Length: 102
Image (tube, rainbow, N blue to C red; front, top):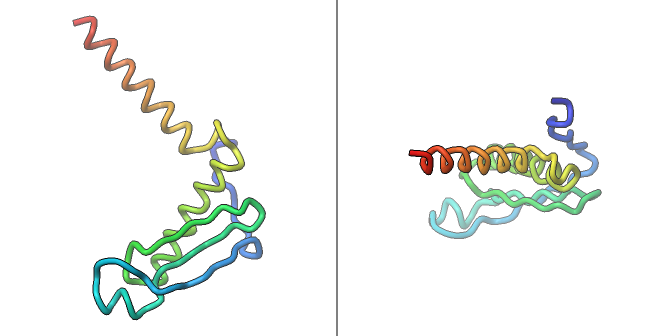
């Protein structure tokens, strides 16, 4: 399970910018800088987040997403997202085989 750990992000490797949001929501979105753009400089992975109106929440969400993206970039086939996808496919295949046997 050790390889299933997400990589730690060093704050010095991150470039964080805040820009004005866009899309539905009117003044509360258009006037405030609540969109977060995070770039991991060593891998050049980029994540944007504008899920909530709160800048602090968006920063947290962006960091989570960036960790997953860097994990995929660094670990490839053994990344957390890829392992999850493989499990889902095998589960679906088992279910198909069970249904065919009926």
